[in-house]
Length: 383
Ligand SMILES: NC(=O)c1ccc[n+]([C@@H]2O[C@H](COP(=O)([O-])OP(=O)(O)OC[C@H]3O[C@@H](n4cnc5c(N)ncnc54)[C@H](OP(=O)(O)O)[C@@H]3O)[C@@H](O)[C@H]2O)c1
Image (cartoon, rainbow, N blue to C red; front, side):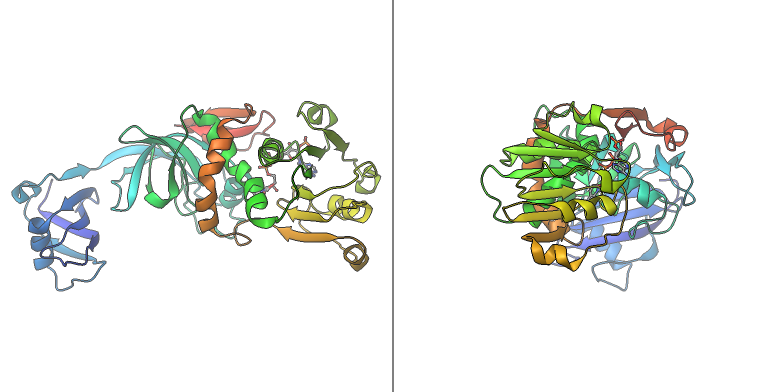
């Protein structure tokens, strides 16, 4: 420690109180470097004895003796690392140096192996998402990495940026990855996979065995993964609709519909009975599809993405003349708690999904590649 001055930036204690209970404190020195102290009663008494406050979260400065005098292991953590940072909305993230801080009491420190540039990541980084916050921001909502004890994990967090050498993530948002999972693949596809997984798990009900699913936008990353997940969940017939026939033909679908340039020219007449529609495209494409739908069975429609539009003109006659249930799927339609409850099963299934196209890029090159058109699959960043 370079100076005897330190600042308690966060502390918590168990119910037995400061004098006798285990207290975990995060303390920074006067250079702003974090000293992570996991203390039992002896240093805690000293910390608290200098404070007038004994509440759960204290913020005060105090003059304490050098760390060594506690006789407790204190780790000075002021190493630096690299991270990506969006400094102004609309600009590509920059590769910068940052403090590598110690994890808080309820956090796990993870060495990042791979993190995906998903649609939600781009939308947040452009300042266009309801959760964008204010710049500067570290982009990313999930990733794959290694804990200090060598476990391969997946984590998700709308609060913490992920494009960095290390991240400290709340324990509740960290999951072990099944053995044999390829880190970059998982970083690229778990988030897109969640789109259809959560739709199936929380936004459909009582689907018949051997159901038929129509995936609109089947060539998107989410749509491709939805093909495998639908089969894993019991679909007998998987129909894919997308603009690109040559790609559609490579996806192992049972039937395909090519989306025409003009939505009203798309040929939906061969569809037949459909139990569930997963829609990533929306807009006029969907309006035309619902108007022409001739399913003899109840159809559960789930809006997931808006690749071609954010609005739908839906004549009332469609709702009166068809056995149609309309829902959407996304944060708000389900709770983050629902993700936490469903993700372990998803991770098992993801391990078995055929390899998906991803483009792996080093963190240091993020600014250069950010605005390049992504034609080679999901962009995945590795430190
Ligand atoms: N609600 C949720 O939980 C959730 C979660 C994840 C994603 N999403 C949403 O789902 C959508 C897909 O996300 P993603 O990450 O899978 O996308 P993506 O991989 O970036 O999809 C890109 C592909 O979409 C197709 N596409 C683009 N514009 C289109 C259009 N106008 N009409 C038809 N197809 C078009 C293109 O395929 P072709 O060139 O082959 O046509 C393109 O290659 C996005 O709107 C995203 O925001 C929602």
